[in-house]
Image (tube, each protein chain N blue to C red):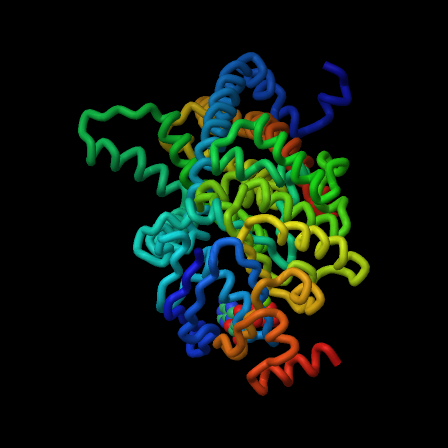
Length: 241
Length: 235
Ligand SMILES: Nc1ncnc2c1ncn2[C@@H]1O[C@H](COP(=O)(O)OP(=O)(O)OP(=O)(O)O)[C@@H](O)[C@H]1O
Ligand SMILES: [Mg+2]
């Protein structure tokens, strides 16, 4: 379970997150929606401490990772992240991208890490690209490799920060299909996205963030059919047209 | 001697006179010996400079203040004082601080050029690291890499491609700068040339040959630098 207690984050005078309280039970598929600059990225980046909260606690399976000398690197091994810009390692082959951290960080043998890497590459449909370099792949393929890289850490939690926003429209679907496939597994997933179709199909729960606060929190049905807040209605009317 | 040579005045007398050339070539072993010392000091100095430069470069990009400050002080100190004085100080101050400690001049030379160029290479490495996008650091950290592991496996291998041309350029400067150890009787090429030439005043031929030997050591690296620059630009 992931628990955020009174989490705030400010950059200078500007508050990107204001007193966020959030519990995400194990296995939940949480979709985070909100306008640009509302604090979505900051929120999920606090969960793996890429962003250090200015106040409050982030507790993952009982471990307070905001505490002094918390085992942040250890927790990050179980909390994988998929970035908007993929961030694959350009100097490594696809296979090495997927197996590097398990070998170096987790101490898994090269054979074992390679075998599971190939398994996950196959799962995202890219086993035949194992020996290519990221620059030789399309954006959609790169993002699928990034997902395989995350999966090969055998994470308990996966964080997605707008995984399809940097993609050409014709590649969005191939990536979403992989993520929807994952949604059937037991992994806890937090997905920042503007893909409302994905939210309807894969989410157990949707939260809407505006100006650093969670102002809507419920099931996808609740969110799309019966939003409580005026700002949510306004946002939906714009995005659904 | 052919007549046309007898008609060339500067080969008959003065700094480039033929007897001076003859004297040099009968004693050329002294020069080769110096060249060997220079090669040794340059190669070990380069290794030291690369190690120091990498450490300093990583320190100056860390998000912790103290290593950053130490790196800054190191770089500013070594870049803003003459190498000659640094080597002189190493040679004369260490025996004062640690009486009885004997350090061979070659080692002083290696430390001298290594520490001096370590500062410059540190700046090159820093620029290289900073040219790698933040996303790479974040991707590695998010997978549980330590800061050092991130540098070692993700950032530095990528930065290396960018910093290779300026690094080979540093190597050229380092080779030339080993000549400062001549002032502490370092036995290097410059010193060998100087002391041979000084004995009978054979400066002309000696400096021509010594200069040529430095050129032969540096020129291939300079060509390599240009090749690497072209490759970086093409990539
Ligand atoms: N490193 C930073 N330094 C200064 N301000 C920042 C930084 N990161 C984020 N912010 C600010 O914090 C606010 C929230 O940013 P955040 O990236 O979390 O928004 P977002 O909801 O992810 O937006 P988008 O949809 O554009 O990705 C914004 O106003 C942003 O300008
Ligand atoms: Mg964002």
